[in-house]
Length: 610
Image (cartoon, rainbow, N blue to C red):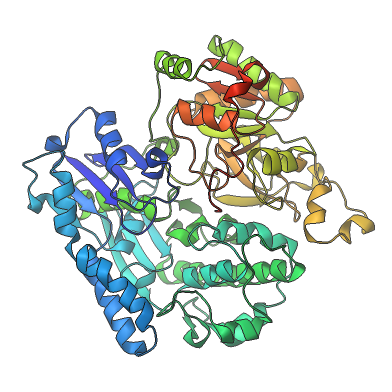
């Protein structure tokens, strides 16, 4: 049985295709449209999924949508009625699009699907609740026969936090916390207040937190959030504007924290860093209390996480180290894009009763390499059309060349195999660098990514070597766990270095791998496994043979405000618009100095802020 899952019309639209419960293909629409967080109907992603499977829409048995629009509309109406007459402006702005489009999504989706299959029957279209989709995306691909599943995000229809129990092919939601009480929206409020983009910049707040102290955590607990012993919570809505307004916070929030929101691109101060540290600390407290209580109440040893809050890899690492669960698994596409996959799996296993086969080794996500790939002759044809100059090497020579370039301090674009599904580059569409270099972090941020200098980079490391370098002795294939660099690899800080202000601290090497060591000695670790990405694993082995170090910098192949590259053309364009030195696509290797200077692009201002 073929089930196509879709998420759309809010942010991060995507499509995923499942055959008899097996995940065949999945991709975000943004990778094709080149519009970051594209929310439109995922036309290109659907076409890719069908093409990857070699089928057409007429072969698909069911299409599953990731939430229930009528329940969302009910929340919108009830919220505005509860707060009336406040919020009339936002209500007036929201109504036309609901009355014109969103209330009729069944028809809109059906009409769109009939462009592929004129005989598509509306009865083939199924709807899952938002948190059901998230929970299904986490449990069904996990390596567990049974698990407790915690979903936390901004808001679905009504739920903002939910607990489900998964056993075999069943998944039942047991508890929920409802809007407007949301840890995801609380975090987004601080994202907005510290000058970053909501539904995009939350990871910046997480990256900024180690520069500060949680000086405002007490104010949060006293005025904004009541956290119970079991981790359930209630927000004081008097300080927020998201229920009825066009901003996340209000004047009362400003007064509590000593000023108006930071404007985008305004200089960051220690106060902003302390605010980031404070909301991060409170979020971790909520998640730890919740997961501890769930372990006590359910007795289950396996935990799955999904929803946008599950992308908080710092909190995930603390849950793992907390020791209450034997195993933790996080859906790599934990946000709304992953809802497409979850909807398909919820439909197949839940609504249609399909059997579930737990992966014998690892999980069922295939390393999250579920997107498009390009054959060697296709790569060469596309590069030729762009007048790119390249050499074609054997696989062995290509690996040796790239490993040598990394060891020489070069910044390398790496475009290989299938594209990753989810927000993280995992060695398919990556920019790579030498983790041993004290300059690499700053170089990649300012000259390649064109983004804020404070943002840390993640290490990719051979799975077999991870315990020698990080305080982690387990799998972290999806870059969703933070662990500290082991003491033997650290460098002690002098009193003068410790006294440096905020971001100045980052320029001080603090370990043998300074390019991936954050100011608190932490790193967002990706373990690289030979069975899921043999080529990337082989590159790391070559680099280790050259340098004695099995760790390299891995960041997504894009600049700020741009989606991760999806095609060889995208990769070449980004290569020519940045200070990348080398580009490896398939067996093709390109050097910047050999390219036609007329093809160089001014990429720095090409995309909006992220």
